[in-house]
Image (cartoon, rainbow, N blue to C red; front, top):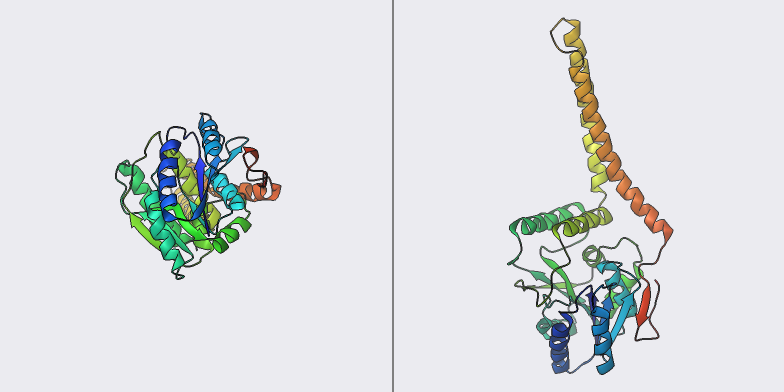
Amino acid sequence: MMISIIVPCYNEESALPFFYEEATKVLTEMGRDYELLFVDDGSKDATLQVLRDLAEKDPHVTYLSFSRNFGKESAMYAGFCNVRGDYVAVMDADLQDPPSMLPQMLELLESGEYDTVATRRVSRKGEPPIRSWFARMFYKLINKISDADIQDGARDFRLMKRNMVDTIAEMTEYNRFSKGIFGWVGFRTLWLPYENIERVAGETKWSFWNLFSYAIEGIINFSHVPLRIAMWLGLPLTAGASVALIVCLLLLAFGTPIASWAWPVCVSVLMGGIQLVCLGIMGSYIAKTYQEAQKRPHYIVARSNRDDIKKVR
């Protein structure tokens, strides 16, 4: 039984040696065959060279290097399409996903009761308070407005059986949100809580605005509620604007002193703003539909130390 670890990497040259040492130690002690599949997501530093050096000295190491930066979602998808293991895990290279949890996760999977063991952080120590608050609100919102089951503090770090991995690889949508996909496909899931761990080296690639954009992607990909909100807002506000116009006309008819331009201008500006918001929401869905229709590849592999990988998918 082989264990495969998918490790998306973007500018992680300083963290990779620490991750490799810790992961190799744990996997060797587990006494199972394993592979470390590193996906270089178009890094601009020496990440690729570090991976080449690791692959030369260790046959358990496989690397894929993209032709450019496609994003973490594409890196994970490339991993799902190319892993060979019976059990597959996704882990970050910064050691915020502790390899020491792998033996317990494997034991739980081999009990036969679960198809995947996922992890979630029970604290956000070290994160800015505003960022933590927005993260908690996102998880509450996405679970209320979509059919994806995402735990508060959920990480991409999880160990899955092969049948779940194959199912995820068959979901070929271009706009991917893996946390939502993990929840949407179902399967029996056990959640393991753990305390937040600081990065071992380097700096996070996820700014507040990157995370905010990622959250918007998740909401749009797994919920139609924003479209319904546009309709719910549009109908009553249009009715209210119509009533306001009638009232203004009546006041003017009875000679009440009121600027003749005040209400019509205000209502026109209000309605124009509402229309722009609604068009923006619908435009986001239309843009994603267009991207799906283009059927462009999720990733393009420029270099690898394996000949049997899927280079474009």
